[in-house]
Length: 152
Length: 134
Image 1 (cartoon, rainbow over the protein chains, first blue to last red):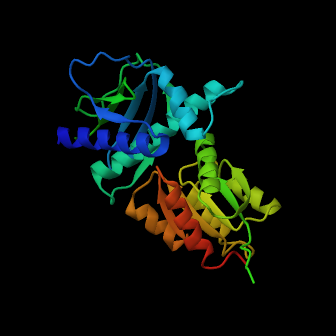
Image 2 (cartoon, rainbow over the protein chains, first blue to last red):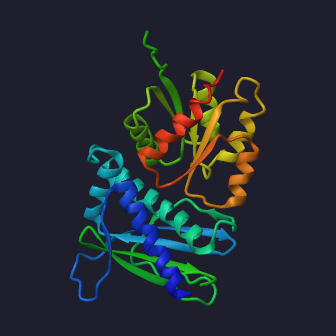
Image 3 (cartoon, rainbow over the protein chains, first blue to last red):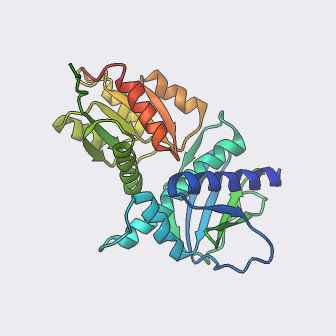
């Protein structure tokens, strides 16, 4: 069940990054020495199961993410806001795709709006299951998705 | 004699500025003759826009503050001038129950995020090819 959850997370992330931002996603390989995440966004879901999804990325990847999604580099006074909006929207799409792939098309979930969070903040476990961590290679940087859910 | 297709006006309703921009860019790239593209951050703003502008079609998210997509569609159907306005939902949601609820309110289509320009073009041609909002 753990493996199904990890597969659903990875495949959802790959689908979202590749389709919406044309960014390459590869499975994490032990021994990788890539830049580690330094920014995070998180959102909660409730309904059939309760839980949260947290996406951690390297800040410099946000420029590419925002530029690819928007069609132009994030510039101007609201450049940071555009980068963060891109991060939150990507998380939103990953969460929706993950829940459908993991739980099926019948269950109904309510999704909270994503928000930027402190990357060092502990992830609250839902129920008795510890958060699941899925690492992947995103454009030659380390990205991580942490899933906390009542059920695996 | 040639026949010039009329340009379509489209309203995009989504609380994410990134999605609104991506959607607009995708629509302009998909080869359909698009006139004006209007934006709203939620269903309530969408209704306010429709009071002011003409739209042939609406792309609308589900989960939004103030007024969500389902509430927007329901409100639309209570107004004679908008009851046949073509609405396509664009959302991360995959729940059959939610989609059926929206289909019962007369939406013309549903696109899951992340979407491709081909999906958007196909949807616009399918919906507006059936006849624009009269």
